[in-house]
Length: 402
Image (cartoon, helix red, strand yellow):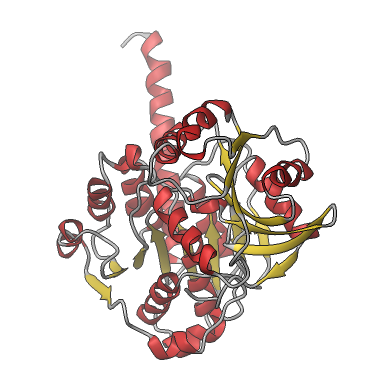
């Protein structure tokens, strides 16, 4: 063997040894946490993660939870919430450090939102890094489909095929294609398909501090029961849950003597979820009879999502809005397509200050009205939500569960 070969082979040996040490470290941290719960799906992961953690805490467990939705955050067993600061791009490898953090914090339960959108990463994250005892599956919607499969049905199959052996899977009936759920018995040790009408009595007396979807709460209650916490007990904890930065909320704001209702639906992302929220907003007593304008925020790194909205806004099925303001990255091209439906009621707005949005809105609704934020919460969306939180008066859109 020549000397030149000794150096790289030695490097490979060191790398393999380090990988072995890393594997032992991760496994030790896993074993130190007797209950590990992962939450996967397209929409609602952050909400379900927070709800489950709140329910477990009410059942005298000490959960550490991590969400990666609108803003990555860690919820400590003490109840404190800390933003998760990253030095680089998000990576599933950060889940290793969450395991270690949970062990150091003395958590006896871990609730983690799954990060992966690519099948190969999804399998590694669940099967090697987290190895959950319970996996909650929220739903499958037409977002990230290019990464997960050629269609929502294929994406659903990807979610099911990545389930680690021996996991207890909990999902709501009717939220996943049957062609995908029939794969679960081949993978999971136990499958709980929650009836769409389950937990009626618990839901009837439950309110949360923001507008939450009943299905998210129903799924979270089922997960808590699977973890040994009765639904009635878990519900008491969920009543005190702290909503995600991207949670659906509304505020009343007075700007230049005009009153506006502003709504944060930026985190819904995909058209199906967004239109469902918009229809509820239109029927809400707070908004009924007022002109409703959309504030669509575009992100340059989410061209697939921009393409979905561009196609929909140019069609007859586009959101029934009185006017549309487009902000964020390169809005002009989308505006040109949207004119086929909205005519002169659509405008690109170069936002420098949040007041620019109200000023543009007054050109279409001189006496004020409703501004419905959607599309993406990153960039301009996040800036607007922070401003609305700081200056607005929180409003109740409807009963907190819908």
